[in-house]
Image (cartoon, rainbow, N blue to C red; front, side, top):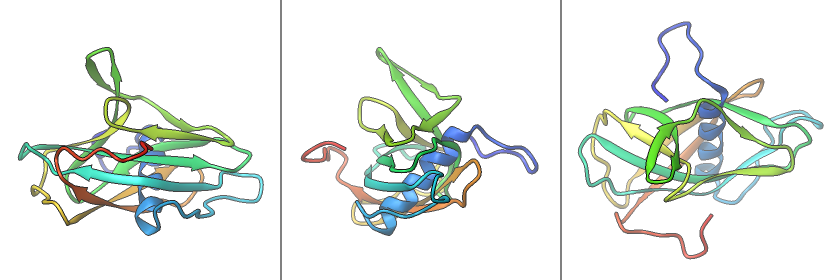
Length: 161
């Protein structure tokens, strides 16, 4: 998703993704409470960004897990690296998702070949070994900051997300 103009809100999907990314960077696989006892309980794992081959675009991957009893709506994802949207892959085509939900007692997986974060209009081209910070915004909860380590362009996680 592109960053909203001042005073304009983006769909919840992007925010949820950013929160998940933030949690992953804060501690890959560790949980972080982002809601009340009966609300969402979000954590992020498996966050990474393949080193971009383009100077203007990049992708990011992570898994957001919700151990809470209420679904979490990702509304926006932000980064100083550029504009961030959540994309889905349908067949061989990609398109921006209008909403992304992390179901209660479920997960939202953003992985290579499937749904993913899309970075556009990059302010710089990150290199392997660096980290990229994103902020996941969810409806009704505080944003979650995630650091995505930049991996080799051909990196694939050993066990997926």
